[in-house]
Image (cartoon, rainbow, N blue to C red; front, side):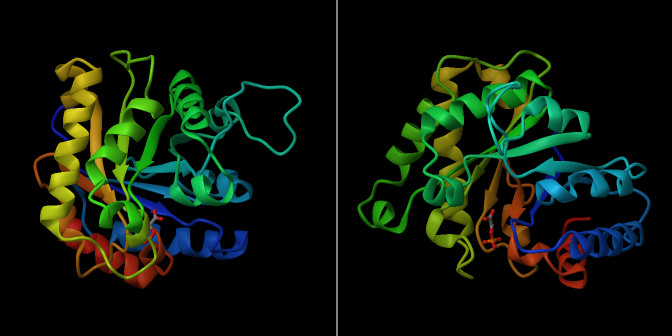
Length: 258
Ligand code: PGA
């Protein structure tokens, strides 16, 4: 990951049926193949767990489109009803996994300690974690953005570093910008990316941070604002929710990246 091209991650959340997921995937693959021979970005598709296997089968050919999961459990195997391990995700061909999304922090009461274990489990099975960080609106109003980012980073990544083979993606996702139609300004994204970079450098060797960690933005990204998070020095990509659910709209977005 020395000179990162942009990374686009489609987070389909629980928005589509398996059938709709497959229809969307096929339409996207067709749309992406029409964009041209060489695409200077990587695309990760994150369907629900039940659709992973079928989507993975469709993704066999295009080299720069990867399978991603929306969550992972921290244990390897055993009596953990309803959970899915990194090992199983790996078996299905998953390459990326979203960890610590604010919707899980909010609705499933995921703590930083749980998130830290999930990040470590993902890394152990060669999955690249996409760690989501970000402040709530109240925290932002109170001027706490940077403190929140530092705290989440230091807790979610406490006690380990990356080996030379491992990569990490950090998604700066201000909670209030998700699904609201209000993305933050480019200067805001860049400031947050800088804060994240500094926080990482306090924990890990600079070489590891610059070579193996990518920072992206998420929160109401669409085809009108995608360019604000591309090729911006430390910021190289986006986590896209709502705008990735319709093939035509998402292709329009990807055309801005290609
Ligand atoms: P959004 O979601 O693009 O719909 O705001 C982003 C996310 O939750 O990752």
